[in-house]
Length: 46
Image 1: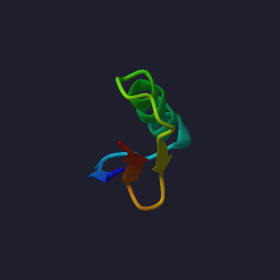
Image 2: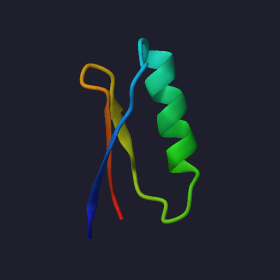
Image 3: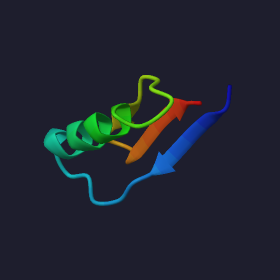
Image 4: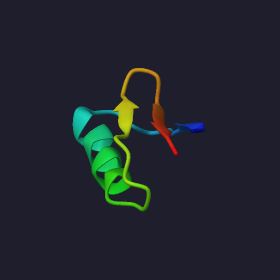
Protein backbone atom coordinates (compact mmCIF):
# COMPACT_ATOMS: atom_id res chain seq x y z
CA UNK A 1 0.00 0.00 0.00
CA UNK A 2 1.12 3.53 -0.79
CA UNK A 3 0.27 6.53 1.33
CA UNK A 4 -0.85 9.54 -0.69
CA UNK A 5 -0.81 13.03 0.80
CA UNK A 6 -2.57 15.84 -1.04
CA UNK A 7 -1.88 19.44 -0.04
CA UNK A 8 -5.07 21.43 -0.47
CA UNK A 9 -5.17 25.21 -0.18
CA UNK A 10 -8.21 27.27 0.66
CA UNK A 11 -9.92 24.91 3.10
CA UNK A 12 -11.27 27.39 5.61
CA UNK A 13 -14.10 25.47 7.28
CA UNK A 14 -15.14 21.94 8.15
CA UNK A 15 -17.67 21.93 5.29
CA UNK A 16 -14.75 22.31 2.86
CA UNK A 17 -12.84 19.36 4.27
CA UNK A 18 -16.03 17.27 4.45
CA UNK A 19 -16.78 17.97 0.78
CA UNK A 20 -13.28 16.90 -0.26
CA UNK A 21 -13.52 13.73 1.86
CA UNK A 22 -16.95 12.89 0.41
CA UNK A 23 -15.68 13.31 -3.16
CA UNK A 24 -12.53 11.24 -2.60
CA UNK A 25 -14.41 8.46 -0.81
CA UNK A 26 -16.57 7.98 -3.93
CA UNK A 27 -13.55 7.40 -6.17
CA UNK A 28 -12.04 4.08 -7.28
CA UNK A 29 -10.11 1.96 -4.82
CA UNK A 30 -12.46 3.00 -2.09
CA UNK A 31 -10.32 3.36 1.02
CA UNK A 32 -11.13 5.71 3.84
CA UNK A 33 -9.79 9.21 3.22
CA UNK A 34 -9.33 11.78 5.93
CA UNK A 35 -8.78 15.52 5.40
CA UNK A 36 -7.39 17.69 8.15
CA UNK A 37 -8.51 21.27 8.12
CA UNK A 38 -5.73 22.65 10.31
CA UNK A 39 -2.86 21.62 8.05
CA UNK A 40 -4.64 21.55 4.67
CA UNK A 41 -3.69 17.95 3.94
CA UNK A 42 -5.71 14.97 2.83
CA UNK A 43 -4.20 11.49 3.40
CA UNK A 44 -5.24 8.11 2.13
CA UNK A 45 -3.78 4.74 1.16
CA UNK A 46 -3.98 2.99 -2.19
